[in-house]
Every structure is written in C-alpha cells, then in structure tokens.
Length: 148
Image (cartoon, rainbow, N blue to C red; front, side, top):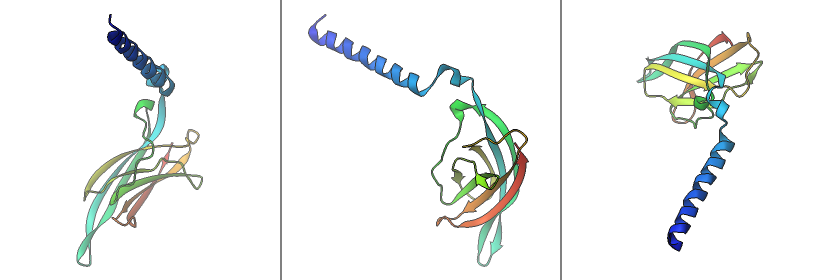
C-alpha cells in the first residue's frame, strides 16, 4: 500500500469508529423495544360563517392513551401558524411536549402528543385542542377528559 492509500484506510476506519461511538451514546440497543405512553388525538374541525368570513369550529375531540416505540416518540414540534395545537393538562400543569400541525381548513386532524411527565395509571387528564390564526391568537377551542 502506498502512503496515500494507508492514510485513506486509516481515515475511513477512524470515521467508522467515530460514528459507531457516537451512535452508541445516542441510542441503546434496548431502546428499539422500549415504549412510552402518548396521547393520540383525533379532532374534527368545520368552518362556520362569522361576518363576511368563515372561522374554524372544533366539533369533536376524541383522545386516548397509547404506547409507542421510543424511536417514534414525538418531542417538541415548532409552532405552525395557522395551526392546530394540543395541550394535555394534569393537576393544573401542562405535561405535553409542544405539539401542533398546520391548519389547512375543515377536516379531520390526527395528532400524536408526547408527554414530558407521565401521570400514574388511571389518572384523569384534560386534552385541549385549539386552532390558532397566523398571529398566534386562539380562534377555536374544544376539550375532552380521558383516563391515562
């Protein structure tokens, strides 16, 4: 091997080792099989007339707790304006990661909400769904309670 070829091999091996060490620190082998509780929300949004325009109205909110893999677990999502937002409240505190999806008009919205803190099994939590306009102002809201 020439000196240049040997340097290339050493570089490639070093790069592979660096990636392996970094990946090992970020993800443990057992995490593939671990799950964590989320709140799965389905919201139905219609639009109703107001003056010369239309505004959203959240007509139905269905929610429930599910377990999903840590590899797919949702964390904070940047705000969407206009957007559909979900908050999960337990003992007067927000326990959800920031969650929103773009508001694109009337329809059904499916949103998976990760929890910063998971209350004990059998706990009653409030799920709040809002629609916020381009300025971030809440223009529609509906709530439901679920047992986690």
